Image 1 (cartoon, rainbow, N blue to C red):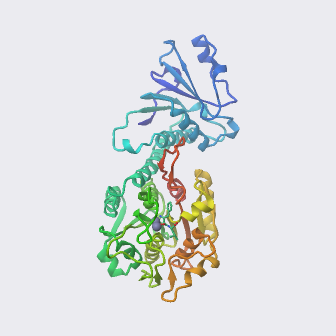
Image 2 (image 1 turned 180 degrees about the vertical axis):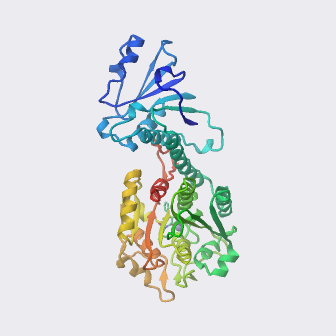
Image 3 (image 1 turned 135 degrees about the horizontal axis):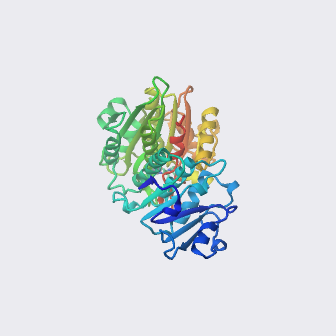
Length: 473
Ligand code: BES
Ligand code: ZN
Ligand code: ZN
C-alpha cells in the first residue's frame, strides 16, 4: 500500500526511512550531527545506489536508506522511477517512510516524484507467483503538498501494466480465448463500458473468415471482444485493436520452437490494460477496444496452406503460411473497427519474428499512414520512455502480397526480406484511406529473458503506458 503520510518531517518517522539524494546535495549533515558520526562521505549518490545507515537508537527509526539519484540537472521522472526501483531490490522492510522533498527540482514537482516513486514500487515488485496474494508492504510518502491524486493515478497505470504482464505470463491452458472473454467482462461490467462479445456463430454470420479460419484448428471457439467507452460526447472514436492468439503453434506450418508462444496475446493484454486506464481515469475520449482471440492449433479441420479464405471485408486470401495467423485475425478486427465507424486505429501485435531481427528487442516497431497521428504517438512515447522505431509502409511491400492466381492476397510472401514491413502492408490492405492508423509490432518488446530494475523476466506490459497517455488531455 502507498499513501501520503501525515508526518511533516522525516525525523519524526517511526519506521525505516528512504532518503533520496542528488549528487549536488549534502547527504544530510543534520542527521550526521544527531548521530554524532559523519557518514556523509560514505554515501554513493549515483543513480540507484543504496547506502544503509543505522541510527543505533538515536532516532525513532532504525535505518535510513540513502538512494542515489545522480546529477540533479540530468534527472527526469523516468530516472527517478528507475533509481528507486534499483535501490528497492536490496531493501527488505515492511514499512517505509519516503521523503519526497529531496527528489523535487525546479522541473520535477512533488506530484511528479510521487508518481515516479509509486510506479517504481509497483512495477519493480511485480511477481507472477504473488499475484492475488495480499500486499504486505506499506510506503508512506512525506510531502509538503497533497500528492494523493498523483499516487492514485500512478497506481492505476502501474497496476494495469502489471495486469498486462499477468495476462501474458499466464499459461495458455489457463488463459484460453474464453478466459480472456471472462476477464474482459469481469474488468468492465461495473464500468461505463458497453461490452459486445461475438462468438463463432455471430462471426460466421458476419463473415469473419480470417478469425474463423485460424480458429478452425482449435477445439476452443474464437471470440471477438468489443468494448466501447464513451467519455467525450460525440467525438470520433479511436479503436485499440490487440492480437489475442492465446497460443501459436504455427498451425500446419508448424513452429520448430514454440516456447513462450503463450504470450502471443500480449497485444490483447496491452490494449485491455490501456483501455482500463482510460476508463478508470475517466478520460475525455471515445475509445473502442477490440480483441480478436483464438488459438492457432492443428486438428483435422485446421487451415492448410493453399487454402483460400474470405475475409470480413470480402477480400480473398490464399494462405501461404499458417504461421502468419496474426495478420488474418487482425485484418478482420480492423475491418470491424471501421464498420463501427472508428476514425483512428492503433493495433498492437506480437506479429513477426522479422521485426526482432530487424530492430531488436528494445524498440517496438511502428508503422503509420498518418503524420500527425504518428507525431502525437511518438512524442507520447518519448514522455513515457517506451522505445519505438518507425518503419516503412510502401508499395514495394504490398506488391509480393498480390501474387496469388487464386485470391486477392497471399498472407505471407517476402521474397526480398523485410517480413515485418510485409506484415504491416498486409494489414494496410484492410485500412480505408480516410482512417489514421498506427501498427505496433511488439514481438521483440513484449517479453524479456532478463530481469531489469523495473521489468522482471517474462511479459513486460509494453506500450500500456504510452497508449493510455495518448488519450490524456
Ligand atoms: N507470433 C508469431 C511472431 C512472433 C515471433 C512473436 C517471435 C514473438 C516472438 C507470428 O504469428 C509468426 O509466427 N510470424 C511468422 C510470420 C511468417 C510466417 C511470415 C514469423 O515471424 O516467422
Ligand atoms: Zn504465427
Ligand atoms: Zn502469432
